Length: 111
Image (cartoon, rainbow, N blue to C red; front, side, top):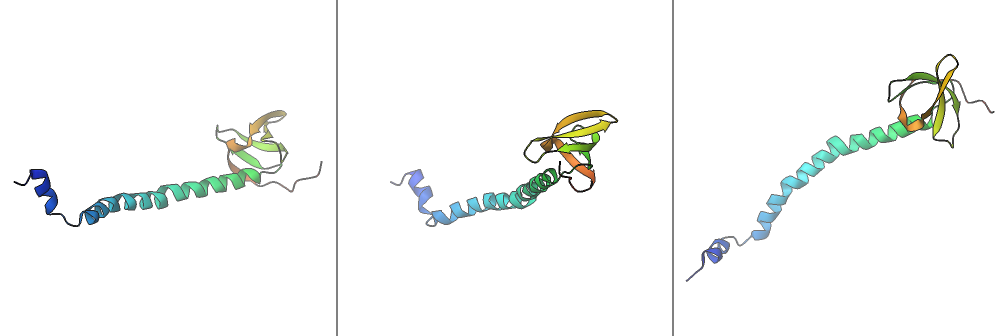
């Protein structure tokens, strides 16, 4: 007598090919996700890091919170910059919270 489990397995001599065909859709989904989601996100992160690194005095910036102001003081080693949001009103802003630079300012003057 042949058991039902043995009889079902006897017809599939190429079991490895079936497993490979089941894995192919997952691999394709991962490749599509990489090119449509992960790669553009990495490019945006790299562009934002370059934008934050190149902020100079007299640039007009917009923060993630929506504040628009002019950069007054920048130090390369500090993670904060000083921004003037109104005449004689200065606030410190964390560099990573800058969302865009609207107007490029002049060159950095040695202090």
